[in-house]
Image (cartoon, rainbow, N blue to C red; front, top):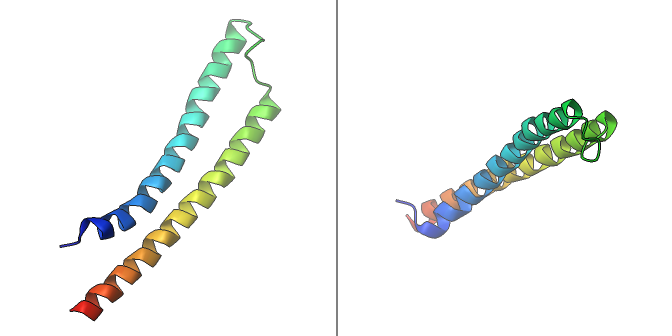
Length: 90
């Protein structure tokens, strides 16, 4: 069985990757809906122009990709290191 420190090393990058994906999906769905409500109620003080909105989503998407790739790389790196330690210790 894996000790808690090894389990944390494996789960932390995966949780971080899932958080990044969730943040992007939250931004995409919630902000688009809020923007549509602001437009429908003619509340232009909180309306975000489409170009700014698309720019934010593009930046958020690239940040999400980066965090997910780094998180998966850390997961695999830690998994290889844990397997090496377990094989070494027998």
